[in-house]
Length: 74
Image (cartoon, rainbow, N blue to C red; front, side, top):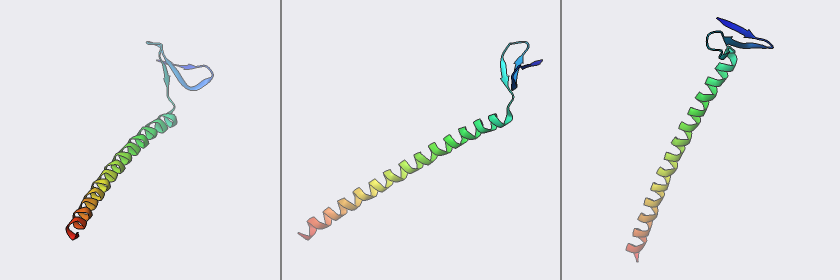
């Protein structure tokens, strides 16, 4: 059985364990959404890191080709 905690409309005490349970569904939804948003941000950051590394690789290849071309011309 859950016993309401005085002065806290969303908190209940579990009679068997004494644990305080927060039953605020809005707060839980916000918490879950914040976790999803953090995961999405991490994925976006990893994607951007990958793209930057690809650009760096392509730039290095371009520089090397330009150097080779320059050496052949002289």
